[in-house]
Length: 305
Image (cartoon, rainbow, N blue to C red):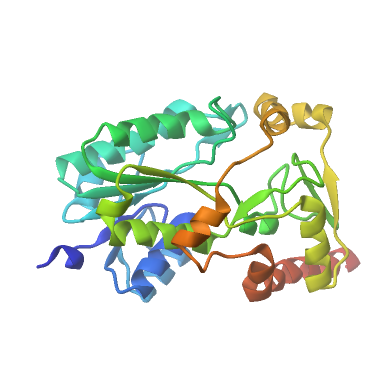
């Protein structure tokens, strides 16, 4: 059996980044094993129908991970976010990711591609503490590795339950300055860079890639959404007191955005590596506008009842 015939284990396969990556690898003819907790869940069954092998394991039960990683040549690692009423549980998130790294070492897995979080500065930003500890463990593991640090997802415009993000009652509210270019990334582009790293492990070994697809001011983004969906959308930039009222970490992120200017991915360099990098307008044209419109249409129907 050649190395290319061994599967890549995709964690988070029923989530956003893992799901996109699993489907990209399967489309490229790469065998995929997907870590799931419930193989009967609709997202898990969809992956199985697409050709993925399902394996039941749990980040919070490390003893289940050895069987999940056995016989794989690489791991796409995206541990479940650990966020609760008191903010990010960095200890839990770090423990989850490091447990997979330890299992990978025991199984002599060749490579890990870890999706982390984009950086704004050398300081800790919202949600970065646990991910940084996972990055450090991977770098010290002796395995070949690549770290992807994606910025905010374009798909976040579809969110419905977050205190910021999504579009509710015709308003998109967030921490970002309204007229300052905001870096965003398409999930498909995260998957594409993961696939590139797995296809050429030597080229991408040791690289940490700040990953963005486009940079669009929030005010322009809502104008484009309005134009493509037929729904009038406005943007509300939260004030500092608004952000602080949502929690210290959100308030700290509001200030960090203004102190640093935001994320700093080199989009031109990324496009040189991957010329098919998604623009915000092309994402809207392909799938985004249709998905957003369906949600907004549904909101109108519900409010009319």
